[in-house]
Length: 309
Length: 281
Image 1 (cartoon, chains in turn yellow, green):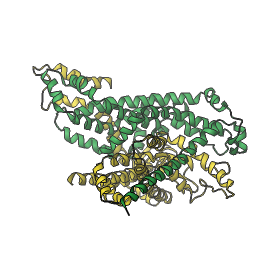
Image 2: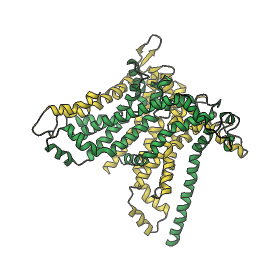
Image 3: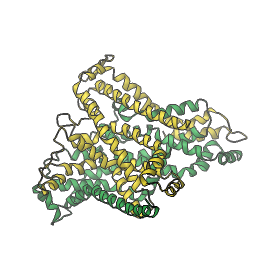
Image 4: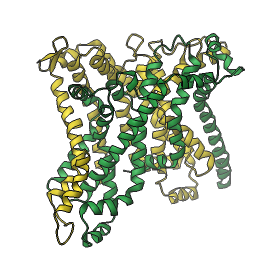
């Protein structure tokens, strides 16, 4: 690896030319990208195609062989109630979180788009939780949700209410994961919106103020149109990100109760690395990829439209 | 509505908004404050009721217990090795490739760049089964390289650095070229020093990403002595319900969160700028 990194310099230096580095195409220039391309091809492109191939195999872990079964794994998946359930759970989770990320992210950005110290500290608080790892976040929130002894249960008891068993209730497990996730990473959409708000020229608002436009009015006719693209970026980024739900669900609820909060990635993890049905897990991961590729394509077309405008 | 009334209303409105955001921020901090409070309580008391957290006795025993159980330190060390490895690797590979794609001409460059960008659309989950197989075949699981290397294939850094190199005015390297300098020398001596802000952005992103990465280390590192702190913390929370060592668990969470929190405090400006910069791209 070290050799590959150093070689561009050596190679170029070895060819002594009167003009030093020449302008124009030369194959030695490709040596700059070579080290990265090794990793790109070996650990991204190759596994991508290997994964597609594996999804068409049925592996037998007892004698370590596998045979080609075509689309049988996919066929099995679509008849697997648990897998269909995980798709449904994941979609539901995306629907629960993405609108909240957009709404609260934008509200916080609007409120904190000022240059005073208080706003800076508040921004730091809301963004600060994002740097924690998923395992720390779930420890903290297990403590919040714990039935009987948890913080929320204690507060409810204080008011004479019957404590809610969030994590062990099949209708509340997924919303509990959603709340944890929003608490964890609301900072990113907030920051993205803040960056967009700061791009809006102040004169627009000054003109609106001269026209006596209400706050509401200038929000609708100045702010919202100006951040349309960021809004789209946030929506699509969050859709792609939240489809990858895994750690929070695995650690908070283990996917339960009764599969009520098991997401697709947890299904892939368990099939692949707990039950060792590698082909089956690979097929599930291709389906997840397909769903997310649709979202990524949407992002691509959205940004292309912007260039044309 | 008269204009003056309007402005007065706006001032009060602003204060109300700020006040409500402060209130939300306090609620936002409650879970962490609660965790912090519990981490100073004796485990035996918490087993009876967590409400005991509001009154003494408080203790540092949970923290001293961390120092005695060696696991956490081993995990922190592993996380440091992995995160520094990933960060260094990404910075080196992305800088070279970014310069290559932005400045060095060679046949097929633009097509290769588009193909690399397509890599941004490939989620980790789509390749993770095959990656696991690759490292299994090489018998490399439970080693640092196995945990580090997959992170180096990410196209994000290459994209970021290419954009950054492209934004540097061309006259700077053209002047150096007339001085008979080699391509690598121009890259190393002239252009690379100009990319320090981008290196900081990419470095912080990569470090935090690697430190907090969960799925791949969970799959690749199966031996406790190879766990990163993120995976290790997951392994300790499995029998949470019994809550025998609740205070100890909370102390672990606080302790494990400290390194990233310190990084965050020190580099907050860069992180904010990094996020904002990534947003504009």
